[in-house]
Image (cartoon, rainbow, N blue to C red; front, side, top):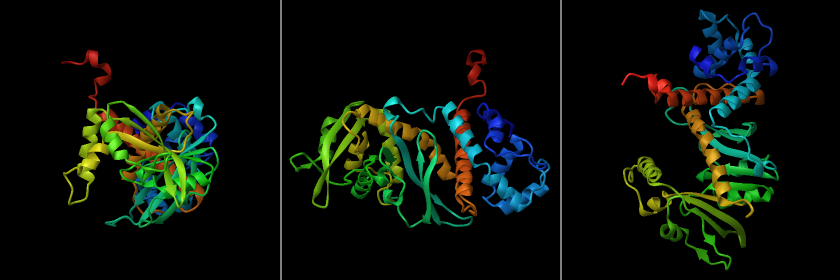
Length: 360
C-alpha cells in the first residue's frame, strides 16, 4: 500500500476529516487505515460481511463488525470522490472546463456490465451519467443485462446540458429525447446509423463524402438534417481525419471485435469510417468543429479510466442506497485510476526518470 499512498494527491489526508469520512474511532484512526479498508471492500467482492471477517484476522487492521464496515465505507463516498477528482487532475485525465463551456453542464453517459461471482455472463448493467469536469454522479440505474444503453433512461437532463455518449447512444430516438429536454447532444456516430438529409430534403451520402474527402487532420463540419416522423431536425456532423498510426490501431480493433464469422476481416465500410472520428451534435454554429471534437477528446481521456473500471466490476453487490452506491462507484473509479497509472508507469524502466544517469 505504500506505493499507493505515494500516488495520492496533495491534501488527501486532510480531506478525510473535511469530508466527514474520518471520525474519531478506536478501530479506524488514520486516513491510511480508512483507505485500506475501502480498497479491501473493493477487491474482496464488495461484501461488507467478508470485509468484516477479513479485518478480524488481519494483523494490520483492527476487527470491525459488518455494520461498522458498512458505515465507514458509505461515509467515505465524498472523500473517495475528492481523491479521484484531484488525482485525475494531477494526471491530466480530468481538465478544467474551458471558458466556452462555462454556461453548460457537460455529462458523460455510459454503462458497464456487472457479473456476480461464478457467472459466465453479465447479470446486471450499471448505467451512469456523470459530470465531466467534476465527476459528480448525476444519475444512475441498475437493470437486467438484457436492457440496452439508451438516453431516455435519464430523467435529470435539463436545459444547457451537453450529453456526451458513444455510438450506442447515437440514434434518432436518443437525439430527439435530448433535444426535447432543451439540452444538446454530442454522440459518436456509427456507420449507417440513420439517414441524413440536405436542406433540400435530399438524402446525403455521408459514406461517399468521407471516402472522397479523407485527409489526415482535416476538419469536417456538415450542416445536415435527420428525420423523425414527418419532421426534419438539424444536426451537425463534425469529424476529423485520423493519422495512419491511429487508423491502423482502429482497423486492428475492428478485426478483433467483429463477429466470429467476420473476425480477422474488415469491410470496405469499416475501412472508410475507421479513418475518422465522427460525431453528431446539436451544438450551435458559434461553437467550432474544432471545439466540439476537443470536447469529445476530453470525454475520451476519462474514458480510459472508465474502461479500466469496466474490467474490475464483479462480486456480490450489496449497496442499494444512493450514498452507498456512490461510495462504491467512486471507490471503483479510484481503483481503476490507480490501475491505469500503475500500467502507465510500468511501461518505463525504474531509471526512466533519471535517464541521463542510467547505465547504457
